[in-house]
Image: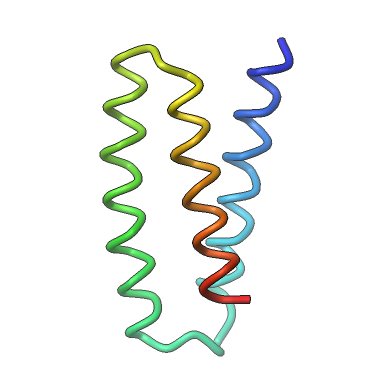
Length: 74
């Protein structure tokens, strides 16, 4: 299913970005704390939309988080 592959790609992209941030010494503690806070909010949203079985909104929330990461830190 195309939608499943899209979600898997979003999850993988998010994981790659976060892994890079954690291993890259250029990020300050304050920046990592901000990302941690944003991720906690995102996880709550993803859990909610998953329980609602709303894959479209789940993908939207994850995509928005990735866009925020890229806009904020690139």
